[in-house]
Image 1: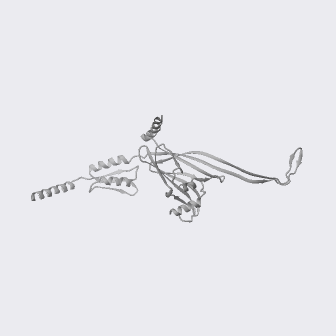
Image 2: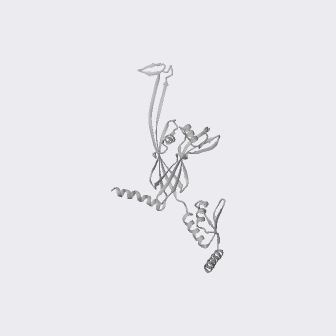
Length: 294
């Protein structure tokens, strides 16, 4: 029994001695394309006791004290994460439809003379009533480019017809005070695009109102009405056709033109991964679907 205990003690001593003799090296690693704190959290998981990774404020570098084997692991991690992000191109189509009317009365000035049947006449007061109406449609295409994981903004309308309703909605969900003296308010969609695979993109859409309060910029994001979908590169998303927060979007997707007429917007987005194997795959899939239909 004593021999066994002695053997265990010797083995423990050898392990401690070996750990004390481990050579750790200090190295720095630049982080250019991702958040340095995110990479730090990943690296920390692979470091053993006695090894350490740290960062400094406003410096995109990792400071690592680790064994040679652990440094090799750090290099492997950075090789997989610290690389340029791909761009995501989003084709945005605005289909606008609205109606306009022109109602009024024109009055002829007394004493106006007209020439009729070879004679001069003075018809006196002449009243013309008009009531004209019509519809208008427009189709506009825009391109929005965002980096993987970043945001872009789309302008929906220069003015907000249902501003009072939007303010009350925002107040109910804790986005703003009950009374906001808002001026020059426009509506936007904040679009965040993020790659989830070589062929699919996560798209998050958040409605936003932006204007001035007491002369200062004031923005409110309506997170409650935000929508998130995952689509294949090249597929189209139709905003307002996703059966989510229909009451909100029925008011949000309405604008007022320069003539004062209201118009309804139908917005569709088609995100595409820019360049690389993902773009090739996105081109391939429609061809494969076409072959399956034959």
